[in-house]
Length: 467
Image 1 (cartoon, rainbow, N blue to C red):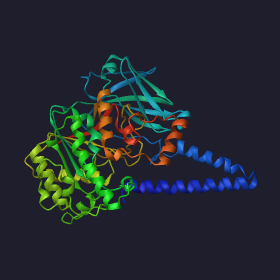
Image 2: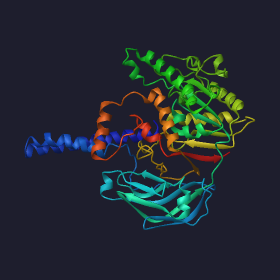
Image 3: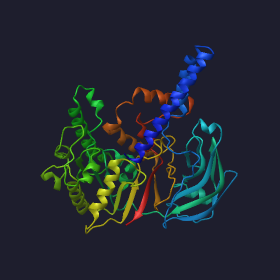
Image 4: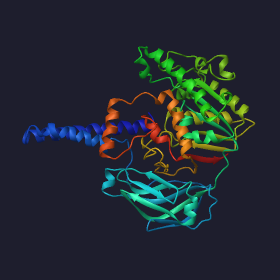
């Protein structure tokens, strides 16, 4: 069981115990006072829980974030007086800028999301944090170098106060747009969620999707299909998405590849490299039906076996063919999804012994261990650094600024993804309605799926290593 699954199991156990204790208290209240009082209070308590306490937050909001930015980052003195931020550093304007400071929630910030507003003459941004926050946090100032340099950047806390002496972290920019970029996507939509802005602007982009993403096809079963048939249809649709949607960003079909391995089976393939890992739901052990849209043949097309050795052979062939200078893939520590962890491990293993080696590694996190809501805040907001409570390994942040037209194009690309189109369950829609009314959370204007809120932002955030 992964760490995130353990945390979620503990969270659900504690939640059940809390609800049971509350129910017993209400029953006791009804026995010893008025019998109708629990019937009145129960829906109010439930509504309060859904509005303010339903987030999956597996750490205390009072804990400090901790980061090691490595040797690539340097620090500069900064001061925050009367809301005006000043930094004593010369800036080129294209650096990744991160401001470390303490954020303390007000009492209202326990019920409404605390956020920091970044205000300049023409540039504004907002970055949100956990309700009840009281600890060190890291604001993303990338794209605000000009007003910061001019001393006109103003910070204002909403439902929170900014405390302590701030510290500015500066990571030099690295050329990305003029280099060959390969995005590794464990599933269709991962490349768009994490890196649409990056890959749409690069001179040459490859998008390589590892799995068909065929499981959890209940939406298609409502059409009258059986479980296996629905999974096969979903896999075909997502395979098509992985080839077709990057065309919206100008990526040629000849550089979009779907490897067709089965969803959530990469760990089993890695554990037994020679043993085929069949689909969990599609009643399939041959990956070739999901590779029919590929523009060229790959090594695993010879037998269609879903094995780790075949995956490595496919990746080596693609790396040798594309010769990427920048590799974009999931972060091995921040992103807990099993397929994401194995995708990064497979690429690094495939690189061993290859004549061509990339120069830059960029990693992204579409999921987190500890906070399912990150990036917090609304569509269009900036992306503050995610929660990390121990700085074990050095990683340099690398943030790309997305203008509003690119955000719109990214939202449309996500809207084309079939997996983000089905409506949310009734309970989730009701919870969001309560959160909108009681907690002031705004829905995304781009779509109902939570990823429209989380991914269509002012920044795309990566973690960089030079290889």
